[in-house]
Amino acid sequence: MEDEREFFSDKGVRVTQTRFIVHDLTYAMTGITSIRREIVKPSRVWPIVVIVMGMGLALMADVFGLIIAGAGAFFLWKRKPDYTVMLQTASGESKALSSQDGPWINGIVTALNEAIVARG
Image (tube, rainbow, N blue to C red; front, top):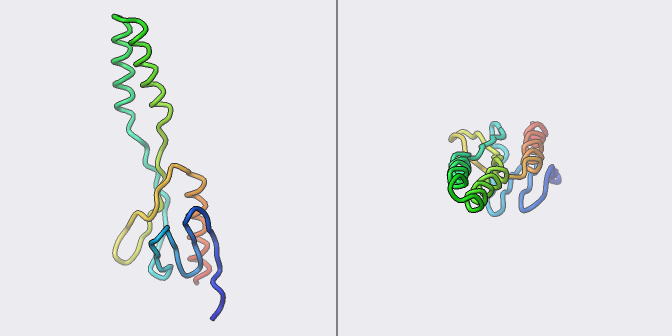
C-alpha cells in the first residue's frame, strides 16, 4: 500500500489524499464531490442600536451616553465574519468546519482541492 500523502495538518485538522479529519470526525475523500468556502458576515444591528441609544443618552447625560455609544462602536469594530468549509457529497451539502481565521480556512480549502486532484 502506498504512503498517504498529507496536504495540510494544523490545529486538529488534517487533509490527506484519502481522508479529511476535523478533530474527531473523519470524511472519506472519495465521498466528497466539491468544496467551497463560505463567508458569513455577522449582524451589525445590535451594535448600531447601542450606538444610537448611546448618542440619544449623550444628549441628556453627556458622559454616560458617550460611554454607551463607545461600547457599541467597539463591538461593531470587533465583529468578524465566520469562514466556513462547505462539503458537497452524494447525500448533500454540509458544514465541516468554521472559524474566524480566514487564511487558515483558505489553506484547508486549498489542501482539500489539491487532495481531490491527487486522488484522480
